[in-house]
Length: 240
Image (tube, rainbow, N blue to C red):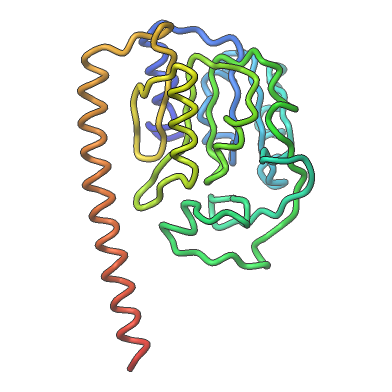
């Protein structure tokens, strides 16, 4: 588990907030779970993961954890079947216009890397009592929020990463504002929103957020320039 994946647990613990029902949509491998600490603590946890290989790993790793409910489906905007594409650690809906793999790696969807899974809207999973939600599904995060019954105290969403920006960022931010959420902090890929009347955002949090946003802006500019130069070089070589 990386430090960024541990960060949400550590930060929430410092604030004194105790979650009773934690959910994660998009787990990938069990050891990388954003809510790993809560799972091991015995807190009620709901996991959602569509990749058959990851599902097998999750079931084996957490076989002794009776506090977990695993939904082996994708979460999307409708109920039915959808096609997913997989590029290394990135599994995303093939029909998306943007995902980390498509933008940062300039990956092109390949039928050999694609597979079909069952999809559900999140209201078919969410019973309305989730108080901590983590969503990382490579560009489809909005569809979780859109159909959510709960109003968690803490919501962590993959919104950015290198050059990539979530294709539904404007919808996500508008929903957060409408429902009384504020940005608590950001890391290299996620934005963490909270209900400020339940967890206080202090001056230290505000300074850290400002510094992080500056760092992310500089990083994105550098990555864009690097990708642009790489593409220019590739075009020049192809002409020779």
